[in-house]
Image (cartoon, rainbow, N blue to C red; front, side, top):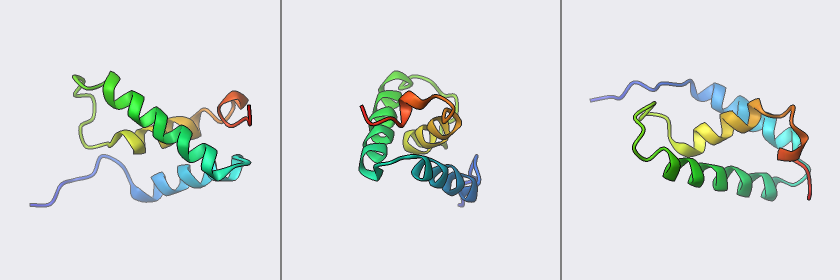
Length: 76
């Protein structure tokens, strides 16, 4: 039985590339995405908002949408 994805994989790749292009340090942005995904996983543990979208994918999409806020990708 094949699952129907709630998102398009090319869209996720586009958002990830947008994040990497905006970041000055790939390692740092990767760690930020991982931390946000981990945080979201525990915050939304009981939520059934979108069970097909993994926390890491959701974090990538959220962070790429927030590129207008420089504190997300700054090197502090």
